[in-house]
Image (spheres, rainbow, N blue to C red):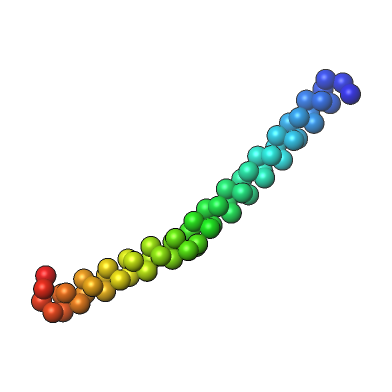
Length: 61
């Protein structure tokens, strides 16, 4: 294999690795946005909002 072919093969492998890493990062970000911790955070925010609304209705603000 000559040097030129070797360089193209190395560049192709690097592109494939970058594409694979990009897909893994996308999957990780999706799990962060929709996973259990995101659901817990949303639930906490909703509970906090509900408590604030109840306090306002009671006149505790």
